[in-house]
Image (cartoon, rainbow, N blue to C red; front, side, top):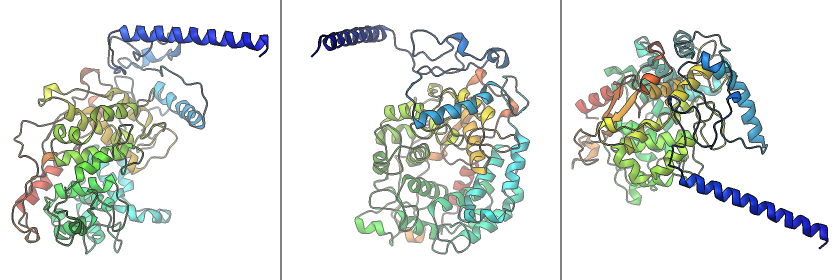
Amino acid sequence: MSASSSAATSQAQSQTQSQTSRASSRLEDILAEPPSPRIETLDSEEEEYEDVMEDPIPAQSQSPSLESQFSGLKLFDIPIHDTLETETSIVQEETLDTILPYLEGNPNKFDLNSHGIPHLQRKKHVKFLEIALGEYPAQFAAMDASRPWLLYWSLQGLTALGEDVSAYRERIVYTFQSCQHPTGGFGGGHGQLPHLAGSYASILSLVIVGTPLAYTSIHRRAMWHYLGHMKQPSGGFTMAANGEEDIRGAFCAMVILSLLNLPLELPSDAPARKKGMTGFLDGLGEWIGRCQSYEGGISAAPGNEAHGAYAFCGLACLCILGAPATTLPKYLDMDLLIHWLSSRQCAPEGGYNGRTNKLVDGCYSHWIGSCWSLVEAAVSGKKKEQMRSLWDRNALARYILSAAQSKKGGLIDKPGKRPDAYHTCYNLAGLSAVQNRYYYDAEEEEDGGVKISDEDGEKGEMTTTLDASFKWKVELGKGVGKERVWDDEDQVNVVHPVFIVPWGQAEKCRQYFEENPGF
């Protein structure tokens, strides 16, 4: 080795030792400091930025107009910027360049509320959804199998905005009668094979309609047999005959079983009976637990990548099985789950993404945002006064109202995207989760889970107590208290935290079938 090479090596080693010494010293300082929360809520009045750095972010990084324009709202910047440029980071920077003008200003020229945030454009969104319930042009033929979804998203969006949908009752019942398959379940239209996703959307649409005619139009016995054929020996459910087995199937099946008060014993012709199973719930909780990934989120099936929509399906499914404080910790690693959910909230956008290293998207206002009510009920005490808030509600509300409202009506993924009924429905559901405080009424007497009578299920005489999802309570407008960033006129109607239908409609449906249990 040459003298110059030896000198360079010695210098590099000296620099490395110096850096290591500084890093170790800094680590010791951090460990010696009192613990502080990783993410600070926007409504805190003590500090203005995330408490993750020794020194605050320089004041010049703020937009000079923000303090005067957005009174009561404190924005935050990304504390650590990775200078490594990748395809993902480039797209993220482009997305920020698109979104930030909507968070810092008002490109749509909407009227602003008392917090400097755009008002909810209620009338525009209502008009958009009413059009979505009308006729579609020929190019939408490819969406024919999604008809139940288009109707559900539009109806649920309208009710969230406070609209009366009674004018659609007869049309909805007539439409879904033609979608119902003779062997059970609902397809996308007349003659189409049944699918659990379509069945879920169809049942929820009829629940929103909420009339005896809507309820009696459902062939409950055929539905029970159809669900029996979806049950798998693994504990989960497939979405269709010989279709994919994933957590959507489990959630859709539990929603239908619970709302329709169906027997929980498998029909005699259910294929899973040949594998030793006797009930719909056999192995289900354990199967959902296996869907939790190493990151902490929940995936479509064991071994897959965690995803926001699957996380809500898994959590809501467990909340149908029993009290969240019982079922969630039993089958999931809650610390890991909360870490993953928290990591989905994007900074500085305030909205959520659905997976690691993905972009913010308005639909996750629900798919992730609505998870928090379920998780908070699982980790808080038995009394509502002990409920802890684990997420930044104001940041999400700011994203929905500022960046997810289309100028002409309807809500969107992010600025630059087109509105659709899907994003409209789930942005509004997320806004309801932001604005209201949900809690599970643990003081109601628990009946020990699921009970089934000794009667033959084929006669429709079985009784169930799959009623945990009907024990939720809500405190209207108690999302973040006085520090909220919306006015009363920006409030949306309450949405059931598990079923995502108007508050009271799920209970009304269940009561009807409890009073009329026969097939």
